[in-house]
Length: 566
Image (tube, rainbow, N blue to C red):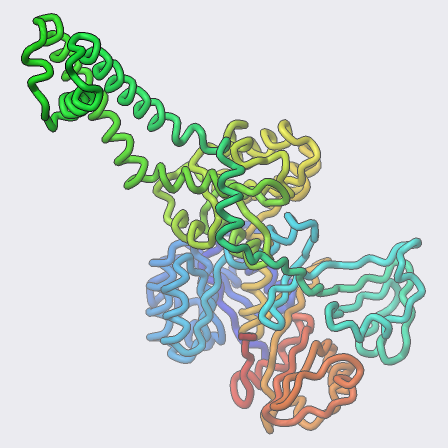
């Protein structure tokens, strides 16, 4: 019997998770605070999602997994605590915005998996900006690999090539095989020497190309000096007021020298500075002067007090406030080949981290000076421009004409479209990646406005939640033509269904694709992997359709556990 899965919170993300689980044949029940079109009454419980009666009606005591898909962390936490009281052994998939809270819950509570829509969607945005149209992601060898679908067409370079020739390359993982005619698993196709035909499709994971970003401090300083023009507007007010102050001192000094030739230039300068700043000194310069000079001195005191007050205020704001940071950020804007990220929310910050991890240079434009992620971005040595990204001047300040791509990922869909259109007006051929919350509008906007890619974070993240609900912690996932497959790692225990079996034979029987095997002494990949016999204590990394994970559910509950790669 299939484990029962409950999805609590059928908003845009929860509803998509619910539908994906149903497509994979899972025994799923939804909990909502209102009726949902397209969901039968026997599959939906309506009521207060935190109440005991609602959870009991959903079958919480018999359920195997509870997916908390609300956008409110506090509500998810309240449902979690009530659910664990009713069923202490239930497995929790928890959608959380607070990463710190999520990691602490994962360490504190058994069978608790915290997931974030931002963290799941960000790699796909980053891959799209780098020119890789990924359908999923895979965590292997401490790196996030993009996954794409390779369709074999008439003139494709792989047409007529045996799949076995693609199997051995460690930088390219074969994930799944979908032949145009008939059904055949990937391992069987590799072993039998199957040749790729037009219409065949391969799901492939590609090792990311990480650039070396090591730069010494001298290089950074030279870069700052070459970009002085970028931050003129930040230093201009301070420079103008400072010049006004110096000019005032100069006028006063020259006046006192011209009135009394016996006054040395040093004494005149000393008195002028003391008079304007209020410090005093050498008052005899003015005391013995005519009344007109005394009147001049009084006027200069008033003017000087105003100028020095403004100067102090601007310098204080520049050094102690945000101006100095903006000044330094502007100095560090790359000259070329960088990525401009507009909007530093949860998705934007994750995208910045992904790009930086890939060795790319990034510039952020954020309109809110109190944004909580600004300090985090600057700690990654990423310059942050505090401006409205929909203005052409802001995009020009980010050196957009020399950028590799622009990502408009604010939380407002219309603002994202406006930013993208403004960027295209400046650089017509610039690749533009746009975030949109409405999946249906995304495809239409991409076609009408001819944006490079329009992505919906919910559409990207929902398969990962569904895969986690079906079979434990995952290394990655992807979806194509309603087929959801997952990548995972399983520890081979003495009672594991694969223990003692040849990997090739087990893969053909269970329809999984082995990626590699970790033993105590080595990592096995390629042809030798297929001929290896699985032993207790080894870790097998594999991919398989989500609908076939049922054969592992019993193992997950008792003798084996699924783990995520470190």
